Length: 203
Image (cartoon, rainbow, N blue to C red; front, side, top):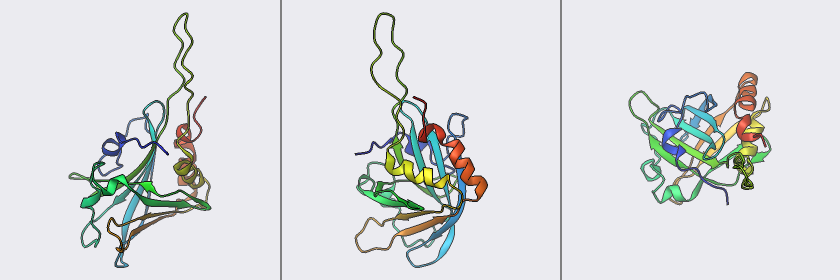
């Protein structure tokens, strides 16, 4: 089982709510499109953030730029304690890489931010602690984010790779939201560079 870094869901929702814009949290934002259950298309963004080290996470944030006439129940995904946010519902694929269904947590944005964002996140362990004088350091090595999300992000770092995020509806039988993103060559290089601490951490 992969570990979910719940603490990043409210603090790292890129643009909706605010992404951590500090230098310690690399991020790449890509414009794309969202297809609603009734077949309409509208603008969307995806942000990829990397917060390495102990307590950090590799995360992806699907930002909905409008929630009007969405024909999709967002309320059931708001916050990590809702029933819908405790079951895998996000399907991410990039090139030949497809992650197993991931838990997705939603949040409404405040004024000036995107109206709503879904976040998937996988935790990392931190670097091995330094040994105290006369004692051995605990054997805790730095680890990358688990492979399911990591491989999708790695694939996006290759020019020409596109991302599809399918967000299931909470109720059986209802149609999902489907978002599509096509990073340009520069954005792919940004992804490869900026999330490197999460994809290939120092050991």
